Amino acid sequence: MLLFSGVAAFRALDFASTKNFLARGRTEVLIPDDIVYNNAGFAGLEAAATATSVGISYWFHRTGHHKMERWLSIAHLSVTAFGDAHNYALETHHPH
Image (cartoon, rainbow, N blue to C red; front, side, top):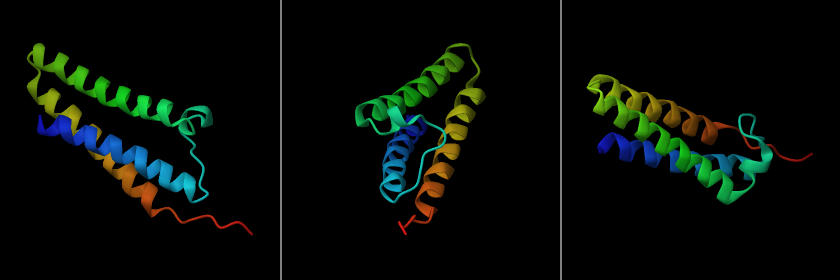
């Protein structure tokens, strides 16, 4: 449960960090603009990513692959945390 909560928390932070860097004049390169600028659509994407991670971990659990269950959540949490830190570390683009 702790790992699932961590994944959900860092996905929520990903939403916030992406909105933050967009507000600072940066552009999103991984997600299409029609999704990232739609709050409900982007929140749905983040929720779907969390649900997919939990679902795959559950499948690993049910099939007896408990190490894979944990490592999937650890990897997802780590990659998302790195992305969040990167988003906040980006410089603000100032209009000239």
